[in-house]
Amino acid sequence: MKVCDPHFHLWDINERPNPNLGTAVEENLPRYVGADYLRDMQQLPAPLELVSSVHVETVVGQMAGGAVIDTLTETRFVSAQLSARQHPAGIVAYVHLARDTAMAEKILLEHAEAADGRLRGVRMILNHHPENADLTWPQVERGDFVGSTVFKEGIALLGEHGLSFDLQCNPHQFIDAAATFADLAQTPVILNHLGSFHDGEDEEYEQMWRQGMKALAALP
Image 1: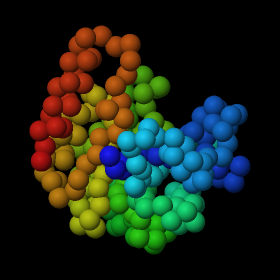
Image 2: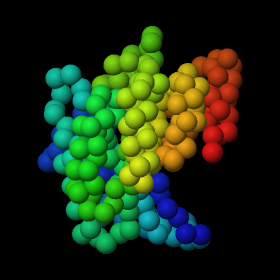
Image 3: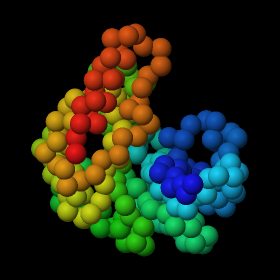
Image 4: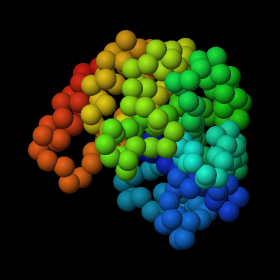
């Protein structure tokens, strides 16, 4: 069985600090580069053969007072790692799609150049919770990004460039997300992390998650 790994990460926080990766990475695995990844993927059970991969950005969420994270630098770093090992792989980069569409397109084109033909899409994490700060990502100042006019323009822009969007948000945001993407069928959408299901919630929460997943699954 030939496998495409649709979501992996590389980093070297000795060269490129990234507090989003957490203290476990800082203390135990500060460097995880292309050679490490491909060596680990050689451990797949015998029936499985890795033939391609998609690197998803790790830089979204500029933390207040934290290291300044350069999204283009990550794209160049990842592209160089993959090129050195001639592994077929795409790159999903970070672009803020809810501020200024013209600026988003400019940055998108810069990512495309930095990715050297590997750019496949964009992830802008949207996780926001009105009451739980642990379920809100840095730089997600509002919970209504997904329904904003500028964000919709950004999603349409991706489709125009033949790119996809990786969606990561909390379950209570699913219905709004489904309404937004229903009108933007030209842009493929990939739901990340099984919809960010938060463990330890009640049955009402699980039903909300299920209803939202069904609404997303019903889209073309």
